[in-house]
Structures are given as structure tokens and as C-alpha cells.
Amino acid sequence: MSVTDKDVDDLYCEVKARYTFTFDLKDKQKEQNENVMNRPTSDCFALLPTGHGKSVCLPSLLMHQKLGVQCTALIITPSKTLMDNQVVELRAKGITAAGIKQGISDAEKEDVFAGRVTHLFAIPKALREGNWRKVLLNLYNQKLLLQACDEAHTVSERGLDFRPTYRQVTLVTSILDAPISAVTATAT
Image (cartoon, rainbow, N blue to C red; front, top):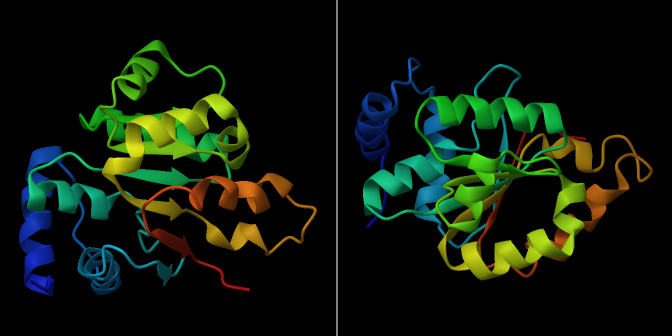
């Protein structure tokens, strides 16, 4: 069964009420979410303007609402600060989010190792570490809805010497059983 604009609107209304979101979806956001939800085994790319809300978290919230089961999104982000901000915002809304990093808080670590996290953020460097790869494969691989690459332009925009760990992300993403959704405001 195909997901329509109306389905996305209806699901979003439920998610918006449940998590007290204060914004409405723009047409391009609806289109992005429809693509992810209608092609659950296909990769997806979204090029949206800065400030247009390229939320990589929303499809998993909508799918969770639609299916009634917990699914997880792995969000790969280029910046620890960006990751930390997103985790704090989601946890404040009651969404189990955590960031894979050194110095992870005890509460986040407990959620991660119990398999309860619905939004698992990671910087590329952390994905190279063996313990986190094992956690992803053993606890989350079967319930991964998608792997999202936030700010995807950083993979190639600044050349091969910029954050070389981003080039190694495929060592992890290729062994996980979930499609990749890449989002950016800048495509080069």
C-alpha cells in the first residue's frame, strides 16, 4: 500500500501531538518522507534549501506511528556539536535518542545497550570503533529503518583530505541491512 501526502499529514498530526512539535511540514518535507516510506528498501537523496527542515529523524517517527513497532534510524552527522544538539532536543521531547561517542552519558548508554534507542546518532570516527560496530550489528541491525547521512555534501565537498573518516563510513553502512537516506542543502 502506497503512502500519500494525506497519509504523511495524518501520521504527522499524530506525531506532532505526541511529541509537541510546533511546526508544520512543507511540501518537500512531505515528499522526502513519502519517498522513504514508500520505498523502505531503497536509498534516497534529498536536496533542500538551508532552513527548510531536512529532518532526518521524522521518517522513523512516522513509521513508528504507522507500524506501531519500534524502529531505529542511524543518523551519521559530520559534527559532534550538531549530534549533541539533536540528541538533547529529541530526548527533551521524550524520544529515545543517543549519540555514539566517547563520553556518552550513562542514561544514553543504558538506552543504547538495552536496544531502546529510536534515533542513534554517530560521527564517522565513532563508527570505526569495533565496540560500536558490534552494538549496531547485534542490537540494531534487525530494526534499522534507515541510515541517514546528514549534511551529505561534507562527504566530498571539501576534498579527500577533509574528514577522511567519512570515506570509511561505508565499512559500516554496507554491512547493515537498511537503506541510506542522504540529505544536504548543498550538492557538489
